[in-house]
Image 1 (cartoon, rainbow, N blue to C red):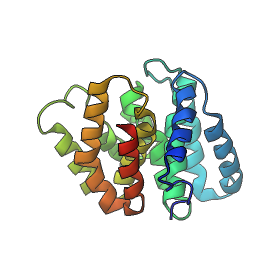
Image 2 (image 1 turned 90 degrees about the horizontal axis):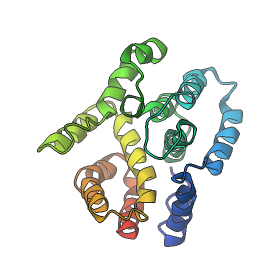
Image 3 (image 1 turned 180 degrees about the vertical axis):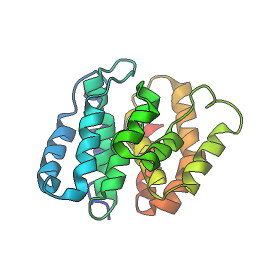
Length: 217
């Protein structure tokens, strides 16, 4: 079950998350996320089942990312936040889910090869990451988004959760986007393709998403 603060539908909560990311988008580290990770890592570091999580954390943290306006060090806070959100959504900390969250966009935002991912994290993880990766050359073609989300829905049950939390982290920023076309298209994608996934896979945060969409418009 998600923590009570996380499912708050009050605009004061949304504003706090917006302000937190406002500094991040200006290429400043997310101090809160890193403090939260520090506390979490102390709790799980002695448990063998989390070894891949720490491997994914260090791997993702040291990647060279290509994201406009953000250094690699700062951009890493996004997959870190997605990982931290997963620990709030699911009761107990799930190592495989956390690992996927930390790595979810490595193919899209870095030049890392599939071979390296397979060697370090296994063929299955590599396959999942490829399913999560958006083909930016095709994303605006008719039918692509529908097919993309359908593949995620039909895959391992962790993949819809990763996508939901990825979009959630980005949605907290949307209100400050001054490009109305980008904002409109982003909300349309969420309402058309993501919200059905939220209802099926994470219904306990459906209301949170609905209120956040209204806040972001």
